[in-house]
Every structure is written in C-alpha cells, then in structure tokens.
Length: 168
Image (cartoon, rainbow, N blue to C red; front, side):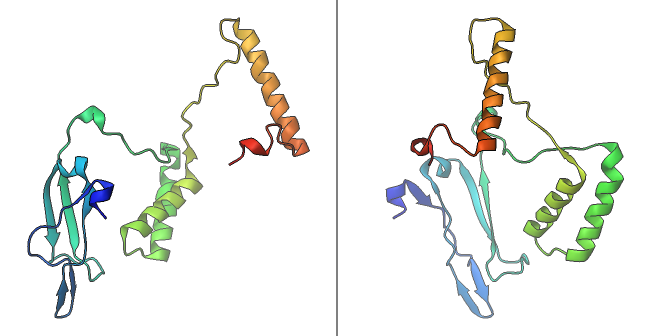
C-alpha cells in the first residue's frame, strides 16, 4: 500500500513505540514520501519522555536542501502593539488559569483565542487586478467601482449571475 503511494517506512531499530505496563509494541509506523525519505538524517523513539499517552514520542530530523525551497507556513497574523500588550497578557493569563492546558494543542487554542479577542488581524494588502489593461488609471478605478456596485446589487437581491454551473 505504501509503495503504491511512493512512500517509504522509516521504522528501524529496536525501541518500542508503545508501552502499557509490561506490554510493549512496535505499532507506530512512520511513513514519508520517497523524496522526503532521502532527506531524513535521523529517527529516534524516546521511551523515557512523559507525554500523557501510552505511545512514545518519535523525533525525525530532516536535512534542509535549500533555504529558499522551504515554504513558511501561512497562518493567521495579528498586529502586536505596546498598547495592547497588557491586555493580551491579562487575557491569556485568565484563560490559562481557567483552562489549565495539559498539551500544546490546548495552549495554542488559548493563544489563538486571546489574539483574536485582543489584537487586530494583519491584512496582506490584496491588490485588485485592473479590469482595463493599457488604459488610464481612472478608467480601471471606474471598472472596479462598477463591479463592486454590481456585486452589492446581486448580494442584496440574492441572485447569482453566473448560475449553478459555476458552483462547486
């Protein structure tokens, strides 16, 4: 099954990935694409770290090929300011005291919630494509103005001018 998807199994070694009492198992499978497998320099199973699970932590070390090849993860971005710093600290402290997170996911959710309440979101500055190429700037602005007006009219009327054929 993995070979048909061009994937390779990285499991090597004799450290169990699962432990409950006296029972041990090598149940966890680490599968990666063939391209990524060439860049894996190390895979280690930690049987001595506590993680609130019967499964052991697995660490994989991947060699970077080129710095510019690696895309940064896109996510939400907020505008941080000194004015909002105290409010943010207070908000996050209250939520942490209330929820008492035990894992990273819950802590991330608390941080995201606090950022959403306290900070303003950054906009990426979308540029609107000019409808009329090669013409004067004000003609392009008129085109955009008319398009927006038409969108408002359609939204108000509840119509979809492109019909159901273009809906997925």
